Image (cartoon, rainbow over all chains, first blue to last red; front, side, top):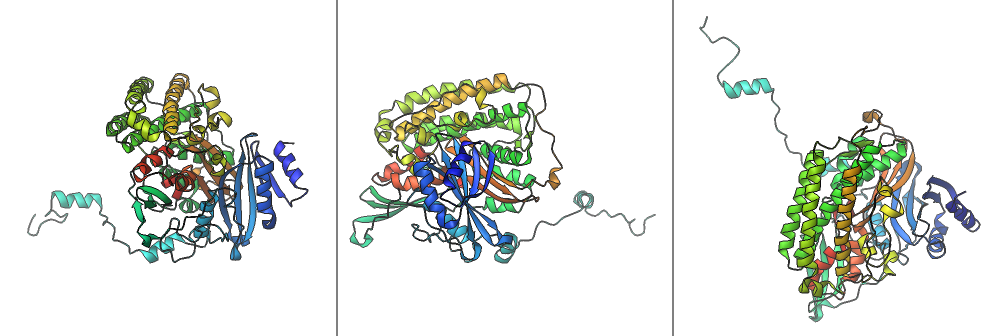
Length: 187
Length: 378
């Protein structure tokens, strides 16, 4: 049994940890309920050595009506990475902010608000534009946002270059008056 | 840790709002800094991104696995190869494909050559930011010699699309080793010249020593990785700590410093260039000349990757670069997240370090953090 599995079993007495997946020797994923997530993050950072937040991202499971946040934590001493999953209700996506634990988390949360519409109450500059300016559509990274339909509706199309049969085209270029029919009055 | 924006009364006449960018002198790409200044001292800094947003992660969700591979290299313009490698590695891990040993050596050679080219561009940038335009001309010329090598090896100078899932697209050309060694010798000679004119230059030292000091306790709080972290005294390098490709068979030193200012960061990168040359020479000598360079692949036009998720990372010039991928068993990827080190270095860290510096040093501070905006916006 790996150290990471031991660790999660130890935390399992206080937290409802599920769906543990040891992807490889140095990477383990697991799931924890939303109400316990930030408390566990703090404990992993302060007591278990997972001090590095590599990133925070979201996966859209539209068919199940959930978002799954993934907090990727790394322990520099054991060189092990943990991916912590937290499910959110897709129609009312809100999560506790962790900007007080890692400085860069505020930026990730701002991006997730813009791209998925997930709210993180109290996170600094949460409603400021991140990448998009004056965006008036649904958050674009949600699965129901159709980029092709958006582009067709928003931008006018430009006529492409005409297509020509190369053989005919070259004939016209080289012999503009030439036709395959015999000239009138000829033999 | 996060610090609230200071409340300044712009109507008081004490402060000035100043925008640097989006054509910012301190970065490779477009990004803007919204500076609030008092005299020439910066009292607040906000980073604005979005000028290069092309929605790569969204695009990738709507394309097949093989269609994605020409897209990914465009995420970090001066250093596209790391995207190619990581995309290939993450797909290989999820599909269980193993690339042959020869391909692993060629990939390492490719990555280190890319690192050297990227560092040369950066070295020119740090010189130019502190008034040494000549250094920029020297280094960019030598970067072009490396791009010549890439053109010869891959057919393209910038976006190579050479590292593919399963291996690489081709073998090394005839006589490549000699030509590459020749370029390495030239670059090495250049580096010693740069050391004399830049690192021993009084003005450069005066302006960079003490600029943008990253305290050791900030490193994990801000998610700082790469040379920015090593300049603060941390002996952390993914090539050594979590070896990938053939890095466990190469000899190299992890360069660190303790001062953690712009000069120390520059010195660490400069020394890493020498280590890169050392590794490249080993690769040139030891890359197998025989054997397959591409694994047997399924029909990639109808490639269904098994359901799963994983995260693969590598040490790029700026720090930890990673690809997180979730698949659901279909022909399309469910989610890809690209972790670029600039995400935190250019936003949270830059906003913190800029405060208290002055307008003239902003560009140099930004270059000393080595950021690429496209990897922030993905």
